[in-house]
Length: 274
Image (cartoon, rainbow, N blue to C red; front, side):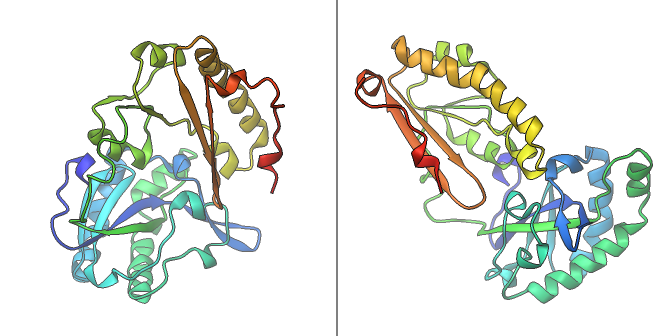
């Protein structure tokens, strides 16, 4: 909320994403948020249509940007939620919010779905071959004032590169943030401790589009992995840590200029095995 110019103040807040839910074989599934892509004008209209329903339930609704809204729901502070990327593609029955307030949320959500069902914005999107926004995805959940934040993140990185989506919230706590650059441009900036986010594989993976996934991976190899490895060999950088993950786990691998000299260590992918 702070990164989008909003003040959370007191209370307990959740993130709301306008979303698309569809039937997939024998289950309800959440579409990838990147495919919904509402315009600012469309999102504003749908936000204004939904706000009275939230106000009737005593919930404060705030607009962040086209893809991100916020709702204050103090009495739902025990609600367990999942991020849209974690829930995408799975049976939603097991990923919907659970806990205190879940029935109230489902009732409110059903009302919003009925309001949006035949809304002109969605009719226009469907006629243009775009996914209609027929749902809201509720997730996150945090106090407006959290102890230790942003101290927990401040000072960890001197530079950040290519932050996207909700990770852009961290940009304000990094001395230098670069929205876009190439590997050569990054190394020319000589970051002391930089954070680089390469998330191009997420979309194809969620869609099970492995042909595109492989194409994106080849681009990452050519445009990022090979140049960064070369920078290690050329002593332009001292250490690289690669953090990879999916919806179940994360792994981190670190290499340095010194480790490249260990000629007796044979490269292996065995650590990636289940």
